[in-house]
Image (cartoon, rainbow, N blue to C red; front, side, top):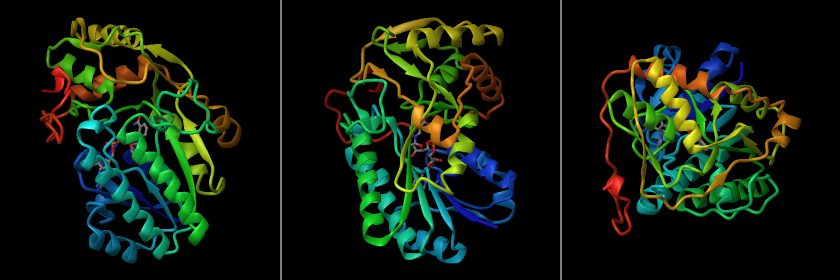
Length: 333
Ligand SMILES: NC(=O)c1ccc[n+]([C@@H]2O[C@H](COP(=O)([O-])OP(=O)(O)OC[C@H]3O[C@@H](n4cnc5c(N)ncnc54)[C@H](O)[C@@H]3O)[C@@H](O)[C@H]2O)c1
């Protein structure tokens, strides 16, 4: 049985992928420091079989022990703090948690002869490049989060050239679904809107709402992720939905669903942020090589997330310690 280690196993992508792999007969080991994900989100089978490790990837000794004890064949490295817009204000934390922590994982993969590492980079590596983004476009990341992802991509190539460590890179964008951290004020807009609606607040849109994004249900990502175990060494794949929405259109869908649940949020426009205007990718390569099909129905996914969110315990939204206050958006002060 193949042994798969997943970092970020308490998060959105990691928790769903762990369940998918366990359902399909893999031996799964999971790591998470529970800073962005929750123990409730970790598959019960991992907890029961003591295959879940609450370890911070910055803790080299702890990480070494997990690798030594479990000897994984493959590593899916999902752990990160993916708050793109916030990353310029938490530069040190961003590079420490997303780049240096990843280097620790890569070191362990090399030392333990892991067959392959699969890394979730991000669409953020394309920065202000021309959409739809294609994998062969030269990355020009526009914020520290994107820079850290691109740095890891380059480091993986170096590790392959020097040590023969195989890798594949995923560049997902706006993956959504239940078990999303809707309490994080700095991340995914759909999750934030759902939480604010349930709290009786307005739906805030930053800027004119004409910025475009495409949202993909996590469900459609799982099979293509699995395929990377067997093939495509050194390849990069965009993953996500082809159907882009103006943010204001997405907000209207959310209002429609909220009304069904008896909530009446109002859309309010707030100070614009420094963000990429139109961010969506071409998925032609993933469709051709990974059989990727995205059939996300945004309204349906939002409905599922809303129903799930209503059953969640009250959780506090935590505030980050800003390293830089200069230019901080009013909504985050
Ligand atoms: N969801 C998306 O739309 C999207 C888009 C592009 C890229 N990604 C990338 O995919 C990966 C997974 O994203 P997600 O949406 O599941 O995020 P998530 O926040 O839901 O999950 C990330 C998990 O990593 C854990 N983690 C963070 N730092 C850690 C550390 N130092 N040690 C151990 N655990 C740590 C968190 O506790 C969390 O459970 C991330 O690398 C993210 O950058 C996600």
